[in-house]
Figure 1 (cartoon, rainbow, N blue to C red):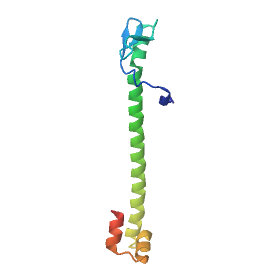
Figure 2 (tube, one colour):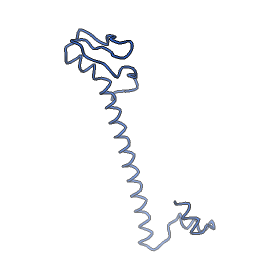
Figure 3 (tube, rainbow, N blue to C red):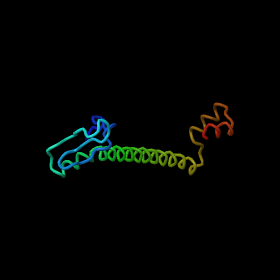
Figure 4 (cartoon, helix red, strand yellow):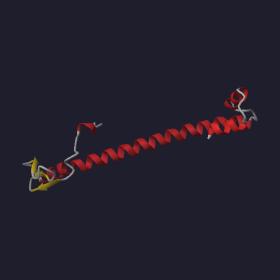
Length: 113
């Protein structure tokens, strides 16, 4: 996997291809980024900052979706455990503990919310 932290493109978001050369259009303007390239290589280099941003965006989306998936799995597991107690008409251990501690149902509800 590529370590995207190794790349700093803060000031190089605007690179242009001029013939077989890649130039920066942010100060210092017309700074040569790379030269003596094929047109395809020059275009690939010019697009590198955009490709990096897309990789970062997609990684963040995957991470978010993984976290959501993990949360959903944990919530389903928790709800299944609660349903077992409901089906057996037994109080959930957490509820039993709260009641033993002297909490009222209103206080328990407030803690849950």
